[in-house]
Image (cartoon, rainbow, N blue to C red; front, top):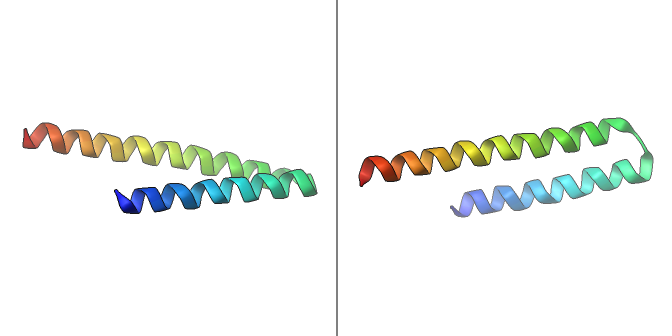
Length: 60
């Protein structure tokens, strides 16, 4: 769980920085990168939640 928290914090920092760079420069690549980071993070959170849920169902 600690690793997930660290990854979530690093992702949040990356999203804020890349969106900030987009606001400063106006380059659409940074906005696309921000959106990809958000999508990847959501998919990863769902996968991890499913693995944890399956583990709890199997063990109990």
